Amino acid sequence: MQRILIIEDDEDIRIMLQKILEREHYETEVASNGKEGLELYKATPFDLVITDIVMPEKEGIETITELRKMQPDVKIIAMSGGGHGGVESYLHMAKLFGAQRTIAKPFQRTELLDVIHDVLGD
Image (cartoon, rainbow, N blue to C red; front, side):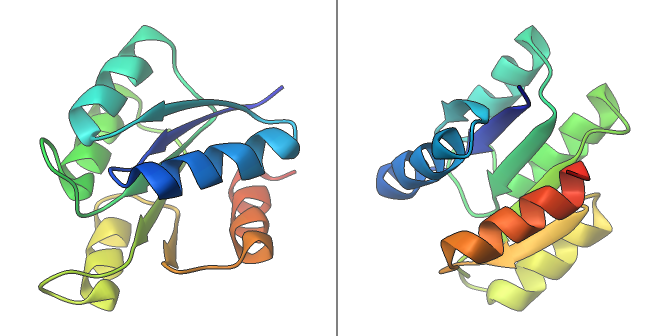
């Protein structure tokens, strides 16, 4: 069973993502910010990390950068609903810093699963 780490500060979105992925038979862990996510990843690496960009404690770009230092071939999907700079600029930056794919919030369940299957190659 493939393991996915979800890093998302919005509790409702975090729970929704976890439920979607567990219904698809993925094993999941969740973190509410990049700092928590990095600690979980250090303890037990995951097959995929899905991270929000705009978060407290440690934001997504910094989290992606640190994940890449720990594990250069880690698979990462970045997601964002925007912020001060707009969703497209955040997602573009995430790709530049190492996310394989990005997805803009809000997204459909099928869109999320298509991106996950593409990144994991399943």
